[in-house]
Image (cartoon, rainbow, N blue to C red):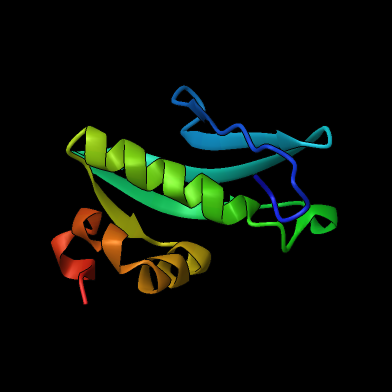
Length: 101
């Protein structure tokens, strides 16, 4: 749920290489490239009208859950994902070796 109580449904769109959520009809995404068992998280985007509601966090959390469930490592190439990973030590087990603190 967002801070204002709206549910957030995150969908993994593997064909597009991203995790998506539509909130108030607007598309929010966390984009990745997958190669050799590594998800390189390259971009998160939440429309300005929706910022501050925890949507990007939910998208990254879904990516982490997916990576963990599928034995993938994450490279946080996106600054938001890098900061999120620092704030969530429980998720650092999925970081690629070179990106672990």
